Image (cartoon, rainbow, N blue to C red; front, side, top):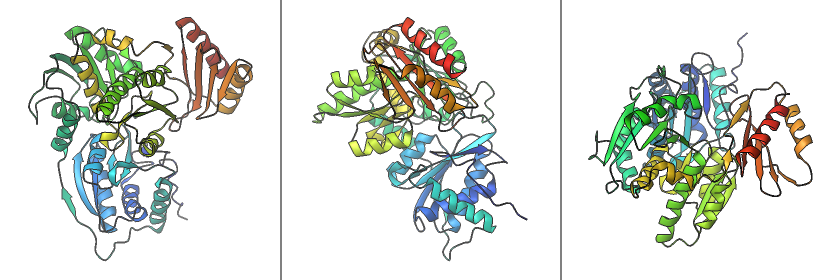
Length: 468
């Protein structure tokens, strides 16, 4: 008896992600390609398809295209792309599309990030579950049927157009000369950085780029392409100091996230980058006649973000963690910019999508338009002390949360139920959020306080309760 296909192991809240040869295979990918076309009613339409540098991506691109064309879609192959290149293509060409990537996950993984025309996100609440069910039907039937007029495949390179578009949004030609170390982590930033910040396609900028791990290699021979983990930043931190650089930039595997290191080798928090870019985007929007520009931030970002937004004449809107929530709110609020604690940065001028490269360009502009070093510039945006995100792998998450709530849900503390639990002292001295991950088996803690000692006390007590 044949076992029925169940793709729930690889279909996540925001994308598809699995182990190559196990939960994501050529057969599965072809069925997903067909389902993508059927569910989004794309027969007769052009869709864009690309992938990252993982070894399995080229084959998966062909398999997806096979399933999609069988159901009547015309496929435009973009070949090697970063995830924000996909969003650019979906926006500029007004076409639905996918890219094969597992972002920062280890080499044995691959996955599919999907978007509708205009770079509108697809999540479990906006079509991903339906695509899963349709793909399962094809797999269980054992065949993807071809329509009477199947689509065709053509090829297009969008890297040059993508680079030119980003440069049109932030003009770096007039900044002071900067030395920048870029750690691509053997991921797609090794392709996009020379195109956008270098001179491989467009004229050079006043930037001296020191490349670190630019060779595209999906086996990640130097370190995992996950800059959220501090150990993966060590090579970049050392290189910034060694080269006397003005700053360092670290990208994840699919280059949609960017982390920043100052000239002393210290990380600049994504909350500080969110606040810095927010101030620039508010000023630009106001100069264009917008009275009260809206900035989106998720509930994990520093309290400094909404405070600075309001002080700059903008309106801060808080949202749950997750790109589909932020992108939806960006659209409904007409927000000019949005930022997450995980270093995802969203721009209205970039189809409400996230792009680490554009955020990096804003940082370069802010630094290069004045004379202070980045450590001094960033200090203004980091007035509080943060724990960063701390993960705990647990067998019984509800019990751990109950222990924390039993101690902290008390007079003098406000509890917010948006996306896990957020506890805030009524005097404003500290706050922390505890939430389960959408993509990994972790309970995540983020704590912040007005002084280091208080933050450490709150952090340590919560972790003691969680891991008891």
